[in-house]
Amino acid sequence: MPKTVPGAMRGCLWRCIRVLTSLVILGFFLQENIAARVEQQYGTLLSEKKKMMQQVTQEEISSEIKNHLTYFTEMQKSPHVLQHVTYTVLVGSSLQPKTLLTVGIFSVQHSPRTYLLETMTSLFQASSEQDLEYMLILVLLSDMDPKWLNQTVANISSLFMPQIESGKLLVVHGLLGGSRAESRNHTSPCGELYSRQKTSFALLMNFARNLSEYFLLLGDNVQSAPRFLSDIFWALPAWKQLPWVILDFSSMQISGKVFHSEDLSRLVSFLLLFPKDIPTHLLLSEFRLLLSQNVPIRLRPSIFYQMDSDSEFEGTCFPVEQDKDLGRPDNPPATVFTDMISFWNTMPQFAYILNDDYFWALDPTEGNYLLVVLDKPQKIIKVGVETGSLENKLNILKHGQLLLGYSPMEYPKRCAHYSLVGPLVRGHLEQMVFYEEDAVQEMSCVKLLVTGSHEYPVMILQIQVWTEVEGEED
Image 1 (cartoon, rainbow, N blue to C red):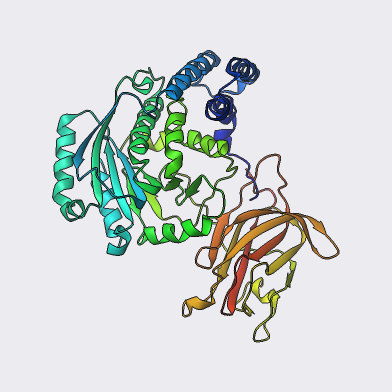
Image 2 (cartoon, rainbow, N blue to C red):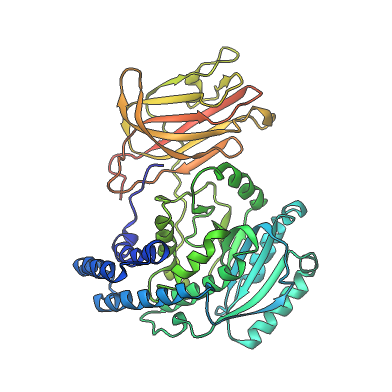
């Protein structure tokens, strides 16, 4: 997959976090020569201190390195992911059979109101009875106010009794006593929110780590698209044979992210290393990088949306990245090749021309391809693939991947190197393309690769390419 240029917000802070996360790699995988490595990373940190954000001074970070290392070393000695953690089951039963997906919602008291009930209502209304057979909704309440807790539990019990009785809803209260995250002084309102959020994440994920195969993280002010679970369940098997850490189904920075449950223990330990003013979504990005997913995987369209927030600080501390409307694809001039057998005298070029024509491929098999070679290299910012028809689901490309290529070759016309964008899900793909600063950023090929045999002809409606207009980049 091509790699992305990080936003300005992330640039400086990520350099600091990468210094700290190198210690995590030591704890997870090496656990020896720690002192020498800390000294090396400390020196790197000092050389970059001028680039730190204003709210994190160099002296704080220097001391945090030693504190994080000591704390993480202590955690490694414990058989438990969290120490001094207590849970109370408020609604439902904790004896849950393992399911496919846990939908985890973290919630605390907000001023003047909380949208938790609306979030839960949206989830259940957007899910069919069949959907509910494969998921558990887990709500973690981490507020200390007994009045709010009692009222929240009463409201949930009144509104969602059928889901509680069927074992599809579990509400717990969690406390992290003695936690470093609870004992910090915060330099800003955002720092307090980040610290509280990280504590809630840790409690929620620690409880959920053995409940299901996958875990979906949501906040308590989220609107769900109809049949959102169907979109997730189609995406998971498509990505099953490909390496990923986080699949993102929303433009929100926290909500809408799906994890492997087997990664939750390490993620909890990782989050607790950084209890101060570092934004939580940056830590999630760094955790993804640690496990070698170098770029975000953001599936489109979004299926979760943020409700309005009444908090004075939440809009500032947790900004929502709006989906940019890129308009119609521009498909720059190109030549199209394929080794698939044409059906009904259609031509491969029909799949790239932006009109109502399409290309029929007769019974494609694994290894077949449709290759678009651009006349000149382009900065591609988004790609899409549409196959099949609404009337006949048999004609979709069930097994396929999209790749972008660079280093063009003349004989034969193709590219020397390719990187994966992603698999098709239900014959469809629409995904932004991300780059890193040191990566090749101009692509010359778009390749649709067949990854499995098909018993029916496949209708390739359109390969869609959006390119960056000169002067458009931030």
